[in-house]
Length: 179
Image (cartoon, rainbow, N blue to C red; front, side, top):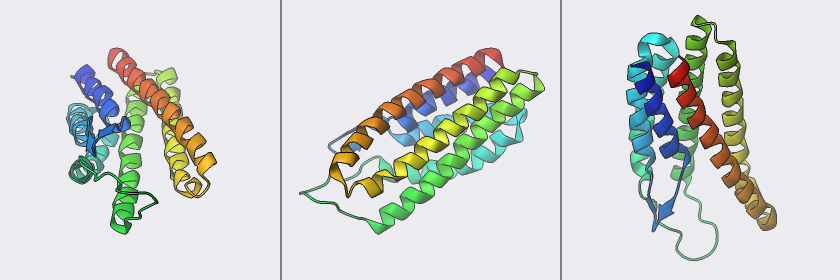
């Protein structure tokens, strides 16, 4: 049961972290990732209160992610600002941070009970990396006013997102095997 829960988190991170659109349609929709997270939270809820708490934030993300399956491509040049989209995006970001925090702190709780200090420390590090990445992604909105820096930052963030996604997925696999 534990390994199955971590397997759901493993695949959930793939869907949540990888955003690839064709004609405005998300090829790996976030909603699938959040549904996988919900199954993972359910499977692991008895092992830590963090998994129970994370489940609540995740359920709201399941609902909000429905609206991100399709986003109309930008028609024409320039920057278009959608105030409602910005608010929903910020709320989603906060909920995502809370959800991932509870995943990683739930892992830390499980590792603590099994005296697995290396997993506890790695869970803390993964949380820090994820948080810093998400905060750095907010700076893209400021850098959009400086196109050369924006392009460099987009490339850097793309590479960082792949690295973070792969390390989180690998960590979930190890947790499934060792916890």
